[in-house]
Image (cartoon, rainbow over all chains, first blue to last red; front, side, top):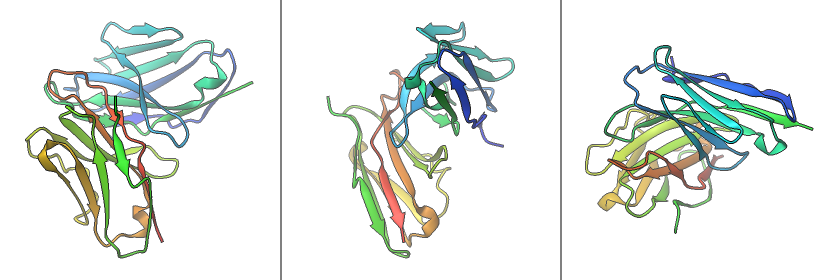
Length: 111
Length: 115
């Protein structure tokens, strides 16, 4: 079993739709969590951190459920430019940067 | 400021040859990672360096793969006796490490093609 698991998709949604991705992680001691975005043939870039209380950045909302060991990303009012692969990332240890990436969920927003 | 750089950007080699891939992390970043990404696939963790600690090599797929990080800065990933299944984009990332932001900054990658 992979340490970080995501539904690979693809998710194909119309502009303006709301779409949600989930990610599960197996290491209960994991300390911090992130969503990265990767455009086609580009390197991944940080989209947002995920805080225990949940956090929002414009149209994007991230939530963490430690008891069930999953994190989620909600995108409201999807734009064409949101089309990308979204990577779930888990930092395994408290004191070190020891990050593990999920395989990613592919999103395509269509006109 | 300068980001993570990798060289070469593209490498085509023949099966059985050795290759060396280079990564220059952001200055001051103590953590450095190597990943591999095959076409249409997610990131596969290879190896992780943190300061002067022994590296985490748990992701290296075989003993043909090795990596070094000299002086806590530049890193080289070496693949010996390359095989066609080694063809992928090799990504390097760095982050601040202890006490700093966990954000990983990625280089543009090296696209390796083994013929």
